[in-house]
Length: 216
Image 1 (tube, rainbow, N blue to C red):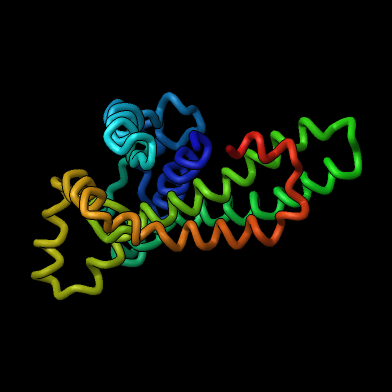
Image 2 (image 1 turned 60 degrees about the vertical axis):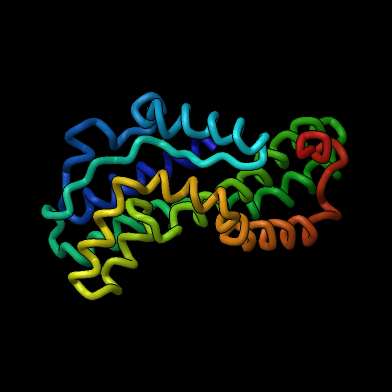
C-alpha cells in the first residue's frame, strides 16, 4: 500500500515535470522517500478513524498530494488531464504487474518445496497488490474534487458549472464520508470486487495453500 500511494504521487510530479512544471521537483517531492509523502491527516488520522467507524470494513486515505502548478504546463488543459490521470495509470501498471507475478510465484512454489514459504508470502503480496491498486484506481476516479477524476469531469461541464464544481473541493472529504455513510462507495467499489474475484478464480489452481493463510 505504501509503495502504491507513493508511486501514485510520484507519477503526478513526474508527469507535471514533463508538462513543464517544476514545482514538485523544486519542493523535494519528486522522491521515493516515504517520509516526504506522509500526511498526518490523510495517511494516518483519516484511515484510522474510518477503520474504527466502520469496524474495519473500509478505510479511505492517501499520501500527501504532490503540489503542481497547472499554469506552468505548456498546454494547460491537456497537461492537467495527463497529470491528473498519471497516478491512476501508474496504479493500473502496478495492478497488471502484480497480476502477472501472482501466478508465477504460485508456479515457483509448486515446483520447488524449498522456496514455498517465500513464494507464498510473495504471492500474497502481489494478490493484495492487485486488490489495493484496483481500489486506489476506483477511489481516485470518484468525481469529487479534488480527486483525480474531478480534473477530467470539470472539462466536460460548461465553464460556469466547472467553476462551482471545483469550489466544492474544500468539502471533498466530508462528501466522501457522506457517500460512505449512504453506501454509495459500496456500489462504486463493486467492480473492484468483481475484477479481483475473477482474477482469483482464474489463478485459483496456482494459489499456494500457504498463501491462503496470508489472505485470511
